[in-house]
Amino acid sequence: MKNLACFILALLIYLVFTACGAPAPANTEGPPAATPTPQQTAQPTAAPKGEPAIESTVIYDEGGVKVTAKSLSLNGLLGPELDVLIENNTDKNLTIQAQNVSVNDFMISTIFSSDVPSGKKANDAIVFESWSLEASKVDKIAGIELYLSIFETDSLDDYAISDKITIQTSVADSHTQQVDRSGKTVLDEGGITIICKGIDHEGFLGPEIVFLIENNSEYDITVQAGSFSANGFSIDPVFSSDVLSGKRIVDSMTVLQSDMEDNEIETISEIEFSLIIFDADTFEDIIKSEPVTLEFE
Image (cartoon, rainbow, N blue to C red; front, side, top):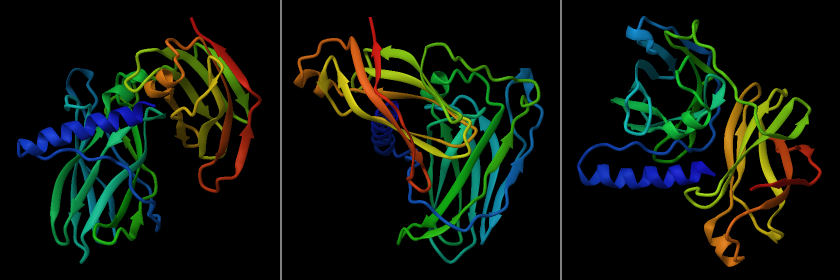
């Protein structure tokens, strides 16, 4: 799964930035939070040459915490960046993270975690990772949706979570996101469609089987693989994909190179697995598929 590979890459870049005395982006994962707040929407502004841009807009202002989306920078080191100003007017040291981020209705991997001491401000950026945008074939950012998770830096206690924040860029009305549905459909049930796009034998951590997952059900879902085998050898792949209702994702099921070597597999020609889909909120099972067999050249 590319998320794991990208985390390792981000960690290496963090170490380089730290050595140079410059601030580095941090990972987006953090504990869930509570206390929903009203939905905020940032409006677009004009941009030269048709490039997406946003107007500086307050996207969150609750409980002493104010977050302003200032601009959209397209040439960040790891991908486009949503520049934000965070103001912490509480008596607590807080950490702010972005969760369940989507761009043009594709779930996208991001890097963002900002520590803001009590009474202080911080300029930071939510990074939309280039590899994730490219895998989804998102060439222009038209619409962004995200949730802000806020917790106490010292105790990790939940402080708040925003309602859905929607940001429309200057190309929102003119750009139509295309969806490539080519490949083999391995599941189409209950509003959930999963298409195998093929295999990348040269993945960062090992071969990667690429899927497009579209969730038109009423549930936020997690998709995992069970009873997986490659060339007849039982293996545990790296794969767990979260997809909000109404969203889609391009994600990869990774067979670690170490497992390839342990089982003396040079090239994967066939895999067999089942799909396990459950409610991401309640963990209740939604679908357990029959075994799926895929062959590769």
